[in-house]
Image (cartoon, rainbow, N blue to C red; front, side, top):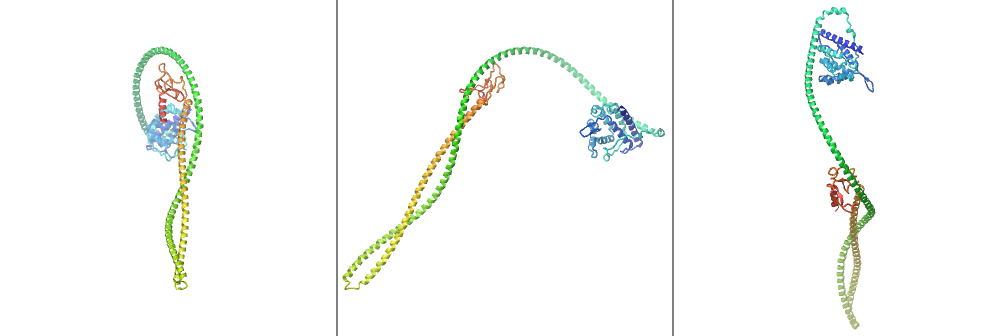
Length: 574
């Protein structure tokens, strides 16, 4: 690897020297077809590839110089344009092609030496890409960066878009550097002046570059001196701070000793307090056990009452369902009765109209019958008169029949009148019989109307009875609803009692070190008190209220939060 590095270094010197000499002798702008320029890029590529690490992936092994060249963008902001141009070229797909394009563009900018020098100044960045024995990691790389400064005198115009930079094979042509010494001696005198001029330009460019580096080193020295002065000031301040910290350490040591003594005294006091609290805890534990037995008995009694109330509630629910079914049937029956009442009212209106018509007809018939009776009486009177006259005439005829035959003629006239009167009488009797038949029919219809009227009265009475029963059932339903609401309220009270007995956990004294409401620490002066509703531990100032709970026969201690909640609940229930 060392032999290869020295050979590449020698070839790089020859290629740079030959490129500068040939370009100065040519005296024009170089293009991409110029052979010395092509060989320069090939040798530079081989130098950059020397000692390059292989990056392994799932598909293949990648070995490209594009990675280290891409770092120049971070070190030199001026190289951003050529880096983006090389990355975004449409015809280039590989990293090697992008690296070749970047080298072409840097040479055209005349900043190839500056970019490589900036990269070689930060060799810790190249450790990721090169082995320790690589050309770029050694002193040869720094020398090559200095030699590349001479290329700034070359003007190059290279076309990158049309070339296939991905598939080019870089082979070093040694024939350009192996020349016949006889030919070189003949041309040596001719090119002596041009070589001197080239060396002059090279030395001027190198001098300019060295002056720039000297100014940079001077600026760095100034900054280092400033930082050194600041460090000296900080060192003096740090020594002063260390002395003050030592004094503080001594004071803190004395304070620590005093604190240890006070803590020992406090520990003795707390041991005495804990003994007292243990005794009080035992007494409260005994009282709580007795209270728990009483509460358990009350819970069993409340559980029995709750089961009885649940059974009664089930019975009430069954009665309510039956009453709802009866109400539906009654509503259906009342709807049917209302329909029948409406039909009977219509029939009653029709009967009333018929009755009124029959009443008028009966009055007319009675008047007609009275008139006919009067006429009949008059006719009877006439008949009686005629009978008397006939009898008188017969008597006269008997008396005078033998002597006087002439009065027979008036007798015949009277008989004809009598026959006509009889016919009229018979016609009047027939009309009277018809009127009597009509009156009997009207009487039968009147009796039917009276029967319908009695039926209507019965229906009205039945309707009133149904309305009374409906009202009674509504009142009964209201009473049942009131009873059900009261039973529900009782059930809710029992549920709350059961929840208070089961759900609330009685907090232990060891688990509470501070009041749940005011968050103050407990001590001998600030004692612990249990809330009989929620079971949490509070101080005396946060649990001064007392209320009668369902699980206790007398008013007991509750916290302020439970006191306000229970008061609101009692107000809302009342």
